[in-house]
Image 1 (spheres, rainbow, N blue to C red):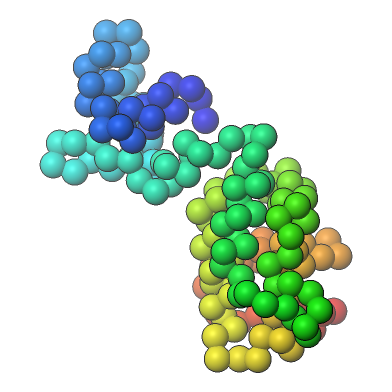
Image 2 (tube, rainbow, N blue to C red; image 1 turned 60 degrees about the vertical axis):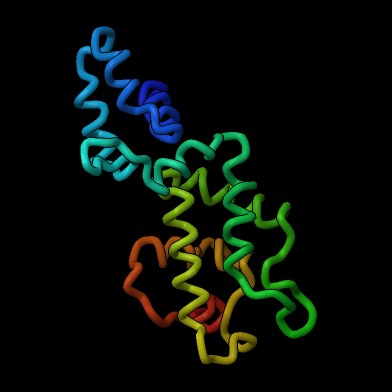
Amino acid sequence: MESRYLIALVLAKHKLANEYIKLYKDYIEDIESDIVYLEESNYLRRINGSIIITDKGLSALIEKPDNRELILADLLMNEFPEGKKSNIWKWKGTKSAVAAKLRSFIKKYPQYSNEECVNATKDYVNSFYGKDIHKSMNLLIYFIEKDNRSLLLEFLEDPSKNEIKSIGEML
């Protein structure tokens, strides 16, 4: 995202977006198109003449390229259940292992936001509601990717999936 968009988001976060427009309208020829772009991209919303930042906009502000995978690791780990699969492996794994898997995933698929990844993870975990998760749900690191296959990607590409087998069952 270009720095001028980030400036607009930061100001919007602090409820200064209208001041941003007044201050920069003489310097930036197309300020309205910047705001329209952010609005169409669901980073901002206009309500009663005020510009309000959305959750997606807030996520864009906290996503730094050098620590995005750590932030996303925390977010995804929060969606997975506590405890261990078969009393051996932690469902959530470790932050470093999850971040390493996410680093690779983000390099391959940079188009997906943290919010989209969290929503896909919620959908995956919720698809096991009322079922014996120990038989079919994957550990978080294998949900992200295992054997060049990613259930995370599948849920991102087709969020309408309500049931999916574990990678082990698909092979």
